Every structure is written in C-alpha cells, then in structure tokens.
Image (tube, rainbow, N blue to C red; front, side, top):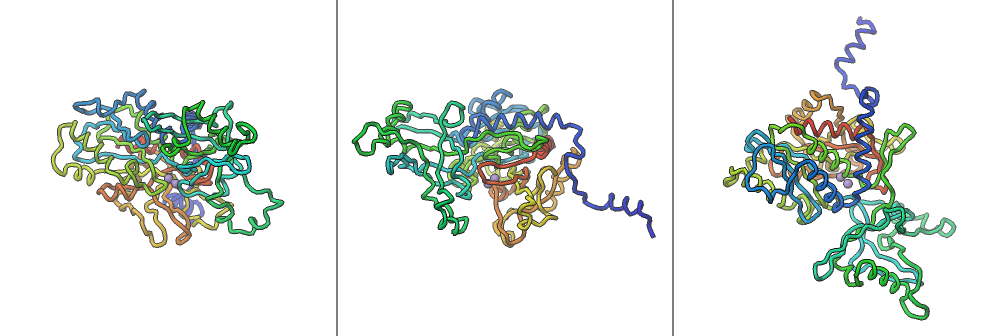
Length: 468
Ligand code: MN
Ligand code: MN
C-alpha cells in the first residue's frame, strides 16, 4: 500500500487543482496598479459612446491612426476604425501573411441600462418625469431609488449634436426613480419579484418647480426652459436623441483588503479595458496581425449596424487586405477560416449566497483567474458556440506556457438558465472562438463586482494570446 506522502504526490501530479489566485501573487502591486488604471477608465466612460471616445484617446496616444489615413499598410502599423461613435476595431499588422489568419479579441461596450423614450417628458401632479425603456436584461427593482445620471447625445434636425453628461460631476444634480414606501406596499410586496416594478413605471423624476403659477404644465415648461437655455433644445429634439440613464455611482476599490472592484457596466467594459490595453501596450510586432473588437448592442442581440451581426467588421478587415495590397476574391473567407479568437465577455461568478444555481465543480470563481466558457447557450446547449477541443487545447497551452491562471467554467447549472455572447457570430465566419473573460458577481445590476486578480490575469492572458 502506498504511503500518505506518495498519495499526496500522486494527487499533486494528477488532479486539476483549483486554487485561490491570491495565494501565489508575487506581483500584488502590479495587479493593484493595473486595477487603478481600469477604475479611472471606468469613471470616464459609462456608455458605449464614451468607451469608444476614451479608447480612441488611449489608442492614439500609443500611435494608432485612423485606417483611412493609410494608403499602404506594412507590419508594425497600428490602425483603428470607428463605426458611428459606438463600436470600434483596432489592429496591429503582424509580420506573418494575413492569409495564415489573425488573432482576434472581441468585447462589447454596451451594458444594461435605461434609455429615454422618444417622447419622454411629461408632468403629473406638478412633478416632471422622463419616461424610459429599459435596455438589456435587468431586474427592474434594482433601478429604483439609486442615483442616476444622464449620458448621450441630442442631434437637432440640422445635424448639430449636443453631448450630454449630467450627474457624474460632484456639482451636478442627479436623478432617481422613486419606489413605494413599505408602509403602503402590501400589494406590491405580494407580487413576484419580476413584476414588483412595472417597466412603464420606471419614470425618472426630473423637476418640481413651476415656470409660473396658474399656468398648465408649468413644471414641464420650466424643465424645458432649463434644457433650452443649457442645450438650445426644444421638446421635439428628444425624438432624435440617444439618452441613457446609468448609475451615478463611481467605480471603486472594494473590500477591507481592496481585492475587488465595484462598478456599473463591468459587463463588458472590464474585458474592453483588458483587451484594449493588451493591444496598445504591445512591445513587439506580433507574428499574427492582432485585431481588437469593441462591439455594441451585444446586450440586445448584436443587431443593427453597430452590432456584431453587421458587416462592418468585414469591411474593416477588407480594408486591411486592400491596404496590404493582397486582396483577391474570397481571401477574407480564408483569413477568417485560419483565424483564432477570444470572445472576451464576462462570466457569472459563483456566489455562495446563491450557490444553488451553480454546479460548484464547473462554476467560475472570482479570484481564480480568467474564465474560459467552452460553450454557453441554454438547455441542451441551445444557441451555443461550442469551441472545438483542439482550439481549447491551443488556448490552454498559450495560458499555461505564459503562467496565466485560468478556469474552464459553465454558466450555471444545466436547465437553470443560460446566456450568450458574440462568440457564435464570429464562429459562423469560420473563426475558432472561445469565450474568455472575467467572472462577475451581481452581473447586470447597477453595481457589479469583480476581482482585481482576474482582471490582471485577463490582461496577461490577452497579451499572451496576441503575442502567440
Ligand atoms: Mn457581456
Ligand atoms: Mn451582459
């Protein structure tokens, strides 16, 4: 019979050991410094338009140039393309022929939120409100009684565009959606949680002073008068606006040990930050052309001309082929069939308070590194892009040889629910794709939680993938 020591050694050798990432962190300072950069980024950008704007600033500071300003591309050139201020593609041209495929990482910049309706402003009992229509999968009750800010654009009929960002600066007012006091909420409290707050009741309280006494809709008029003075707008200009309500709470370091980050929209801005910085920090000309996608509309199905389902990404890739002077019929199909991709999207972190929804053996844990989801989907993997075992092995190998801590996980127990990402859209083009992102607690809530360790491993993992 083997002795205890031998058995321990055999276990050490054969078991796929799970371990808290913080146990072996010689570089805690690097992890914390990198997280500080992320927190700053998050506090400048809460919407897809703001993410694209900040990403452009970062990319340009690192030598990236709008692809339209290049006639001919060569290895080492750094380009970007911005699609309608909401999605963005970047690339560093590699040494190897693009025919052999490119390395792509793609994340999305949109997050669940409340959008204003096209005709939002009304007055009821001398209070002025803005009506909203929620965007993405939210638990509606979470969006009442929290400070909200308004971000976005108003485009007047003549094309003049006004950027709005109100509620983030300490001196700005904030806004909120009221909820019923518990004393009078007997009926509400008996409802199912999903029906506790109606979508049509998510109305933002925005004013209470009448313009003058003894006139009708005086509070609404006063609000419009303020907006007119500040932005030169009329009520009709709301119809051509995109105004998003997001939590007016800062992204912050969290926990006594400051090991975590709390903030709105970390799905999927945490992966945007990791992929973007891993690209722009590249200190070599990579062998394979490195491509970074910042997508829009993922939370509502990736449709429309800024979503991943559109052909704009193909257009960007074709422009690269054109400007490398290599393009010919069907070459892009070949490039895609030879390409590899990490779909950089967040994973559900295991929450001990809600342990029953997860398979503990296959769940993603915060603080245990970057999560690889071989597949997502629901029920019998319906709608899943199921990564090929050969490709999972390639990605594993990259991570293992670069000392990147990773976990291969599933989103919740079988038949409990499910989810999806942009992975299938790129996989449909022939690209080898796997979901690979940071585990999150309270996903899709106004205040999501992540681990600084996992963020740093994502940065390391994406860097290793691009350099491979
Ligand atoms: Mn996501
Ligand atoms: Mn999401």
